[in-house]
Length: 401
Ligand SMILES: Cc1ncc(COP(=O)(O)O)c(C=O)c1O
Image (tube, rainbow, N blue to C red; front, top):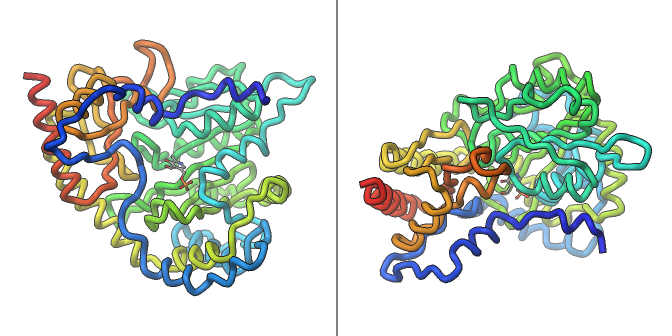
């Protein structure tokens, strides 16, 4: 058995289940789950129809690189969304079966933990999506967590000791971030690109929340867009990971893409031809329809905006909350600062599930940047979110009274 498996941490939802074991919520109140970031808006008609029309695709093995029509549709979307007309669909785009598997596989691709060289380091934002951590550990790397700078939610790269940078092989970035919703600024990207040029590490930019943002007229800047604006047009050592799961509310489709550095994509393709990363032709057809349509994405954003507009005024005060720059999570400071007690007692008294922030970050007592926060996913319908917010408000004001 691979001994590195022993280094894996229990998933946050497993820890939540353990926290709530034996707790009996009030059955008179309908359960409302805001712990898991699973989009629940209806899958768009264009995606459903394209999928049904492409069922013949089940009869053939798809190529690992995906079909040309899908890669072209993705490149066209990258151009429309980020103004990147020069992305080459043949060499700079690779469809993947959801961003999760690709975010895991990138560490297996990049990290060289062979004998004779210093132990590789993978940098992770703290807090972050736990898949990065498992991917780095299973690749044999040492994981270094980068806390946010005081007063900021984005990781403070300058806090990484200079001796560490020489061993860094891979840096995960998430923008808009899970769980904080923060978006990397152009200056933060510039700093990271400069460090990557100096030390040679790869940047894996997780952008699976890129299409959920409050103002239709002000989409968050993407990593490739920032690189392009800074003159780094070959996207050297940079890959972005995008997904339809949140953009098009199809988490069950398992569809996303990786784009960027052509040399990295070529090596990724080699790895994927062994680990079976090819996307079914049926899923490709549905994905092509999704990436080619923006109307359902605009509607999706409207639904999230409606929920944030209704929920924020109810929670602002009892909790410390602000509208996120992107994504569908509220990253809320809880009264008293004990996030696990808050999540447990809220469930026990009001049958609402939220995720303790300390489960999403690392660091001992007094050092865990997720402590004192809960992550509230606005994925259910408007009524359920409003009902949950009213319950959380009652619970919080009772707790602090
Ligand atoms: C930050 C982040 N990255 C990646 C993923 C994976 O998404 P998918 O595999 O559905 O594209 C998730 C899912 O919740 C996530 O929160």
